[in-house]
Length: 96
Image (tube, rainbow, N blue to C red; front, side):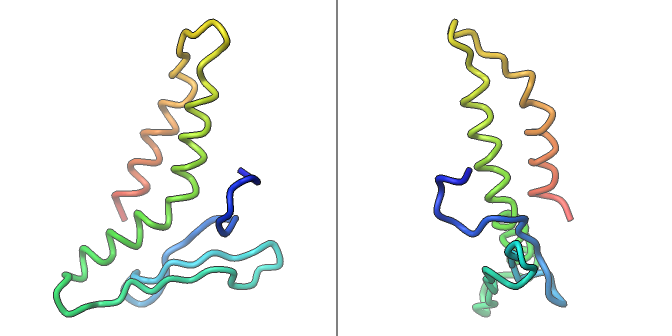
């Protein structure tokens, strides 16, 4: 995933209401942060769900890359190698 231009590392959620997304660089300093602001219309639960989903974006991209690599030269798709990781990631991206 080195060819892609986004903040590398594990993105995490934080803040007293879990509406802040951040990533640390290799030195452990903040390399990226995003505050899911309350616009006065979006319920807190939805803001938290948005932050959780955004925090999983790099892992989702990596999984999609792995899915594309699961197709061997003979054209037969070996999806089993990615399915358990896909189910795990869906759960992580949708449940606190």
